[in-house]
Image 1 (cartoon, one colour):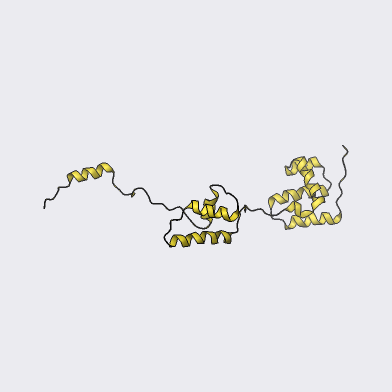
Image 2: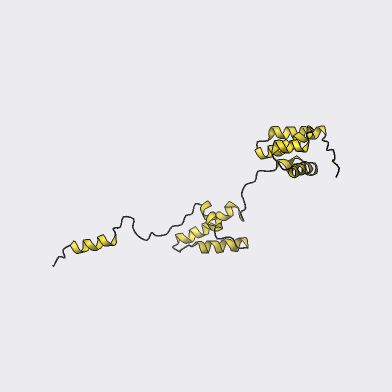
Length: 168
């Protein structure tokens, strides 16, 4: 397979340099650095040694730049927003259950999960509903089995035996 010479125009070189100046993301800087070094005529081996990328990925970045432009290299910041509903939609769904709880009904996570699944149209994982509830400030409240300051059973029995029974 023959090596093909990749040439960048002056506009492309200026675009890459300008993108490096405006960039604040270190990962995007590494990708832009591959392009910048390529515009300076550096060989692939030198680029790989300085950036730490695999040679295949470095070639891919150059090809992607020519096919899709600078935005494909810079990319967008990605946040972990894989929600089925917006925050407001979730809030309205949960507020319905708050109203039911204020009326005295017992509200369980099972009911909230069923309503959520009905609204989104598919099943969700078991932990997903707890993340949603936590995002909206809910917490699991259940009565504790014993009072934390309760005396041990042996001590209670001993005190019953020591207490005189009053005869009236």
